[in-house]
Length: 418
RNA sequence: GUGGGUAUAGCUCAGUUGGUUAGAGCACCAGGUUGUGGCCCUGGGUGUCGUGGGUUCAAAUCCCACUACUCACCCCA
Image 1 (cartoon, rainbow, N blue to C red):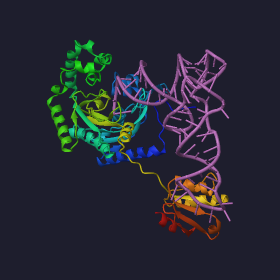
Image 2: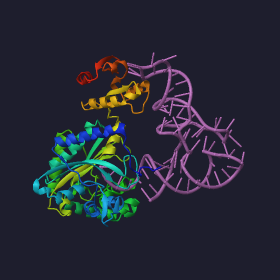
Image 3: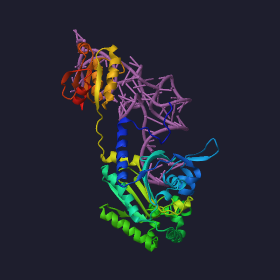
Image 4: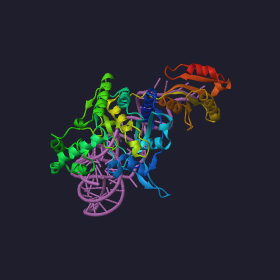
């Protein structure tokens, strides 16, 4: 048997409605904040991600689906969206058309990691990128949007964590201080953190290993290195969140895996989804556009993991999906009437009714059982004496009542069903 | 990439110290008097016991390998 690729999932009818619900909510909220949708290709030149995300990050160095196409080009399935959006922004000079571009997306992403609860190789994210302004109000707005969506899904057990990495310069100064601080304690760090010391020293801060946290006890504090404008912006973000009644925690050890972040970074965590608890993460990236060859343009964005969000909804039992109904199931009383029934169904469908009938030549009893299983509101019987008089029987399945109507009296049928 | 756990029907699972033809509930199909559902009753098993080896008179059951799934590390949404 051919099976789905490891880490990919099929999504079937009853569950798809949860996805629709989430997607509709996402579109609705982004629309209210006046973000417009952008769609970019699922694959890009590998070099885009290498430059945009950072060669030394795990995503780029060991998790990308990279292949050589028949023309010899190295292409990669997108592991995240920001690089693609920024590429499109630069390529099509969006900055020239609008001084501020507020964009959102809903899209599959691909990373070849070992699957786990809340972690798949093909997964889906929604998210946003605002390109063209340094305003910290946009930073806060990102958190507000993500938080609103999660709240409107009925999620309760959420924690918003924020931090500021400062400007590129202060970030570099801090990294040097941290390197100095850790230099003589290196052998006390976990194996992973020894590695991080060379590759991505900030990530030692959020290590889960107890021994690492012991070593870090008197480590220099990131916030002490922020310059004045970073501090001021961080204050605005905090004050704005407070004014919106969005609870947050300042998490001094929050750093993020992607290299391009500066100043505000944030994450929203659910305590209900196992170890992959981060539902949403993002931050400001004022240097990325220039890094990828565009005019210097500040940006801020976030991405949210849709599988994780739905998992949290599942675990908090916060999404109630209404049972599907159809309007009419047509029961054929004699087998040779299928042509008549099909045409009748078609006429009703053109009038915006959801209509189905039997394609398996089953008995009347079996057809009735099917109508019941489909949760049909009405049944129409076609055939017999009534048909000789050009009539059908319309039966209301909820109370069992039924009346005869002329077969060409569509408006009579429709008014009773609607 | 590293660890732990699991694998029997479409689903959830039972299957004793190895012993006839591998089971239950749900789901599914048919029927319960001409053409009417849900509830009920009757009948129907729909299976490569994950795969491949090994031990044995005999393996779903014991051993080995592999694969898949799953949880955690890692990573991140």
